[in-house]
Amino acid sequence: MTIHDRVRVHEVTLLSDNWYTLRTTAFDWRRNDGQWQRMHRETYDRGNGATLLPYNLQRRTVLLTRQFRYPAFVNGHDDLLIEAAAGLLDDAAPEERIRAEVEEELGYRLGEVRKVFECFMSPGSVTEKLHFFVAPYESSMRVGEGGGLAEEGEDIEVLETGIDEALAMVADGRIADAKTVMLLYHARLHVFPPG
Image (cartoon, rainbow, N blue to C red; front, top):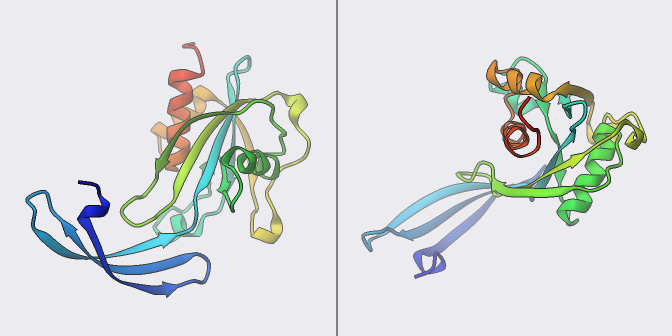
């Protein structure tokens, strides 16, 4: 039996189509015991995205961003968020989109990028799947100041920090963004030799 065999959608109602799309859905779910149960769920569809952690093995550094995130602020985070560069795909291929985002946000034009995994970040309510990448960087790859696009409301600070300091920022709460934590631990386990 497939998942499609276990879901019967009854009604989908559009709640908002302002910034992204919010819908509520009434459906029946066939439980493991074979019984059908009526459920109601809201889903927020903002499209899929990509994120990338640039690293420099020789210097043991990574590039991150620092920016204001209203949803984090309204949930009690009274600081700027430190994050890996990221963006929505907007119908582009993940590698193509993340290269453009890194150039816009960090000011670097990367060479080789490597996809390491993909994940649903908040599958209880958000449809987005993120494609995760890592890539080496050198100072010679810098082609601009970064900072994002002002017309998109971006006001991004570029941070270059050591991998050990970045992991310390995860441990003490200065880095609280899930995609960034995942990429930093991936880098610690698979990119940077112990040191």
